[in-house]
Length: 243
Ligand code: SF4
Image 1 (cartoon, rainbow, N blue to C red):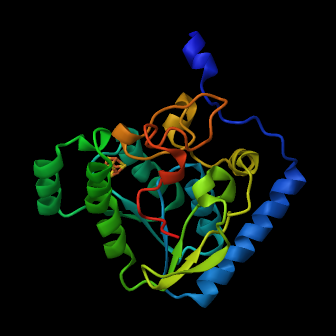
Image 2: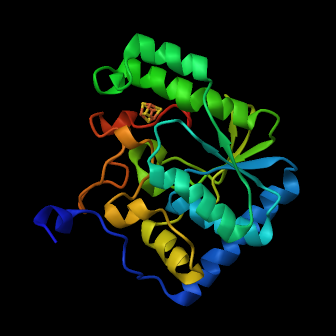
């Protein structure tokens, strides 16, 4: 293994006891049951990354009526697209793939270029707007609750995340059932329950996003350091999770 590879982030070794994982699991299942009981049309947005796989695994047992969708931006890694089928086959659940409007994408690319996001923040926001923000609005239309895998510990932009909060932009309740989990607890849950994981987690990617805007990180970096790595860390959200 090269020195560079040795320095990459790795999946944490499990440091949480089985009884702690059982307690976490029960708490998570209670939270998901509460969401499903209080909201007939709750929807989980999944990136197929570790946190969303924890939620998918738990809801497959206790709240399979929660609808799953993913934003098929057109710039995802092939491994992410393949992961959709893997998860569907494993759990017998359907994941809706929400694609952006083709004409809007063509207009954005014509104005800013295919990879204009590296050159200008305006282009980056335009790309995320067309490929993510507008499709998310479409995916949440008619829903009463939105479920996400956000955790406080992930970055400074997520430090204030609560279990439940009203989302003004989408006019619905947003639930973050693992908002208070630590990274090692996520991986302990995955190991304990045998959850299938995205193959890029084995290559130094703790966070999964669009291919051109996500890179592997070093072990010493913030877990979201590989997302839009050329930006200041206070601005690393794509517009989906507006405070
Ligand atoms: S993450 Fe990158 S490629 Fe994906 S929508 Fe945003 S700017 Fe475009």
